[in-house]
Image 1 (cartoon, helix red, strand yellow):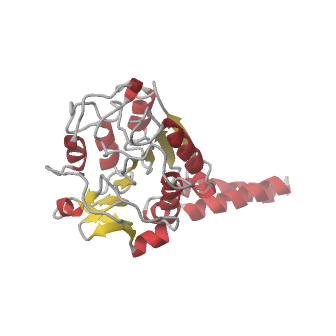
Image 2 (spheres, rainbow, N blue to C red; image 1 turned 135 degrees about the vertical axis):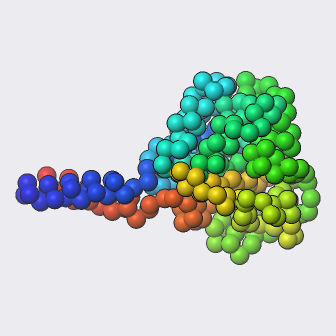
Amino acid sequence: MKLYVSIALFALLSSVATISANDLAFYSGPTNPDWISGGAVAENVKVISNDAGVKALFNSIEDFGDGDEVGDNSPLAKWCIEHTGNGQQDVIILACGTTPSALYPFPNKKPDGSNVENFIEEGNVVINVADWIFYMSYEGGVRSAENAAGGAANVFDIPGLNWDARGANFKATDIGKKAIPSFKEFNSTRPWRLEHFEGSDWDVVTFAEADKDTADPAVAVSKTPGKDGTGMIAAMWQVAHAVWPDEPDIRGIGVAEFINNWLAENGAFDVEAKNKLATTWGTIKQVR
């Protein structure tokens, strides 16, 4: 029996060596209250973090909020820096739609080499919900000086990148129907303008479109991999609804579906190794 345990333990350790122990961090506010309420953010964070598939993908899930996000010495900034270039693909979800100074100092004080840009360029993932991505912060409950359009333009390295309202009746694409089965038609007010990404360092995968050049939600995938994998930026349901008009709120459910059905397949996540690890560990406990 001891020999069997030793063999199983060796198998367990071998499995651990193959697993990409990805980590997930939420930034949950304060919010721009006209775009998404604090209560809606809290509920969406709960839905995503309690999802069985999401929990299986990540080694740790942390939630950062007010007081955690101011400057390079803040807990959120330290998390971001520690998870940049660490050899694993990690994820930050801006569940409140705002981008604090821990990630990108406002107003555009670091147009190149901000913590969030470094994080993405090394091959990690940022998912933004609600407000115009990288536009401003509401840290401390007060609206910051605005990065405005420059925030996204600088992080994407696409001069003139714009997210103003255009189009209506965003309908799921074929990819969207598979990746986000709970999706329902809606009108985005901060959509992707796909013509800006032509000739850029990004390929854009769209999950819903109003026309061939206007999308939301969508994810941009870098053409230049980093140490941690392939960098990705998703912007999803960028529309002003303090409380989503339909129940349940698609913004939490949809992000969880995106992670489970698209990111798990296209990111650096070893789902099979994690399942094998759980099975092996269960066998070890039984023989003991």
